[in-house]
Image 1 (tube, rainbow, N blue to C red):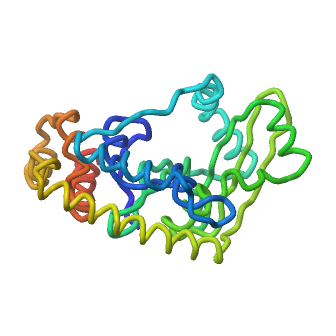
Image 2 (cartoon, rainbow, N blue to C red):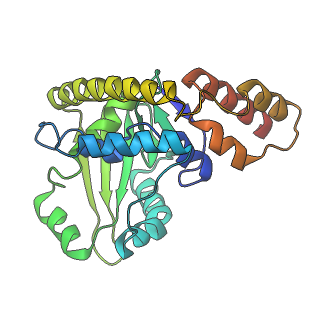
Amino acid sequence: MIIHECLQGSAIWLSARSGIPTASCFDRIVTPTGKLSTQADAYMHQLLAERMLGRPITDVAVTSWMSRGTQLEAEAISFYESMRELDTVRVGLCTNDAGTIGASPDRLVGDDGLLEIKCPKESTHVGYLLTGSAGSAYKPQVQGQLLVTGRAWVDLLSYSPDLPHALIRIERDEDYIATLSKALDAFSEQLEAKAAELRERGWIAPGPAVPASAIVTLYDRAEPVDEAILASAWQHYSAREKAVINAARARRAA
């Protein structure tokens, strides 16, 4: 696993996950029951369009419940840490070593766990309380997070400030992860083949406008780094180049 240090929701984070399949959309490749999704082709075309444009495509309408979840996330994390009597670790984007798939769990927990916060509408939350389960809706995302990070479990916290909390421990489902991994490998292979075809036609830029070495030099010299330019170039860097840039950023922040 490679951890790309960036703030979730930032321009760098959006650019880092642009053009590759990420866990929140794994259900567009494999359904919760383990079958291939009929949305896979449309999702691949979206990722190819992102590579052609050199920027992420945000085509998801933000609902009031999604905004509420963003507003309550910090409060929910503090609640979890107090309840469990531990500290969690903020994380940006996690990818496999090849940089072909990614996941952005809300927090890392110890050496083996992840935290995923959900702040659904009250009726959905009560359902989680009664069943002690979140059902299968989040299965591709959660098991995908475990696949990418190699961790053992996810604590899914359904949080509402006005209702009792629902904390659901989800363990690795190795059979499902194997199915998901196989499908993601096939999807990524096809994605790269189509990207190569588009690159040969000149429809995808061959590489970043700013070499990774130049970005590293700026960080090491404590000179200003244009985050907008870095964000636009990010998807073109290899996993190793991203790791080198992240290390330089960390040195500068230390």
